[in-house]
Each structure stands twice: as C-alpha cells, then as structure tokens.
Amino acid sequence: MDSKAGDLFSAEPADAAGSGGVVGKLWLPKGLSASVAKEWFDRRRATIRPWAGFVDHRKFTKPRNFGELCQRVVRNFDTYNSNYTFIFLGLILYCIISSPMLLIALAVFVGAFYIIHLKSLESKLVVFGKEVTGPHQLGLAGAVSFPVFWLAGAGAAVFWVLGATMFVIGSHAAFRELEGGSEMEELFMEPV
Image (tube, rainbow, N blue to C red; front, side, top):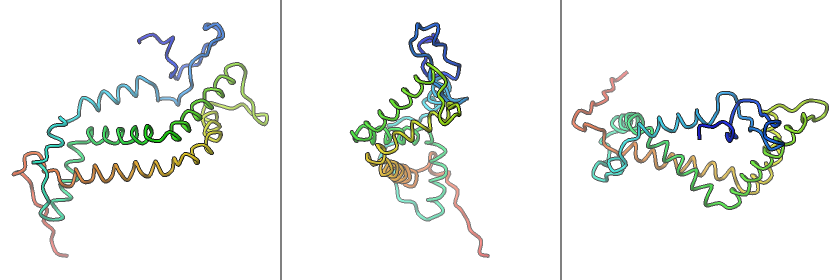
C-alpha cells in the first residue's frame, strides 16, 4: 500500500508515459490527499470515547434548568466530539446507501469527472479557447451531473442528514449527564 504507483488520489502530476497509455493519477485539491484523510480519520478514531459509556441509558437525565442544559451541551460536544463525527458520517452513509437514485447520481458524478480527467491526460482540455484546469474540471463534472443529483433529491438528502444529525447529537448532548456528575458548576446570572 506504500507504493505510489497505484495511488489514484495524489496531488502529484500524472505520468501517463510510464504506464503504457494507462491512466495516471487523479487530480485533487492541494493539501487534500489520501494520507491527510487517513491521518484525520486515525486522530478521530484515537480520541473516540467507548460506545458502551456513550449510550449508557442510566447516564441520561433531564436537565434541571436552562443553564445546566447549556453547560451539558457545550461540555458533551467537547467530550464526545469524535463520537458525534462518526454518527454524522454513519448518517451520511445510511442516506447514500438507502437511496438508489443518489447512488446513481454519485456514480454519474464520479464517471463524468473520470472521463474528463482521461480526456485531459490525452491532450489539454480546451473549452472556448481556454485550457480547463483541475478545479474547473471538477466544476464541469458537477455541471454535467447536476440534473441527476436534482432528480435524485440530493437537496432533500442533505437536509435530512443535517436534521437527523442535529436531532440525534443535540438530544445526546442535552440529556447525557456530564462526566464527574457531582462536580457540576451552576451558571449564575446576575440581574441587569
């Protein structure tokens, strides 16, 4: 896996000559690579709290007042940040897998980007007398696949994922008792 020869996602320029006419590497924005994504994922996985404690139903209570609710939300977001990230990613995955049209739309987008990328490897891709750069290729693939995303209801899927994430994570953060429960500080408000 350490070999760069099979790495399709690299910021380095493609070398089609050495591959016998076979496809080179895909273009990704600078700073975004498989190693950066893997490092981010590994950091998140290392800081995840145990799931058994995360969903322990005995640790869920109703907050006494609005101040305690706010304090719980802030501190639980800090404590369970990685768990919440994986819940968000799981909801995205569920939404994509449960919608066949969305899967088709994603396949059209990836296919359009791949075909445009292949064409640009053969020769410079020129549209209206101007060379099409990597970011513009991605935009062109998006424009080609936009009607399919629209027909698949991608907008509704995005808002469903955001709403479900806010509900699940917000409910957990609001009703999950803080770690070290008796050390909880009260928020005092002074009259103005």
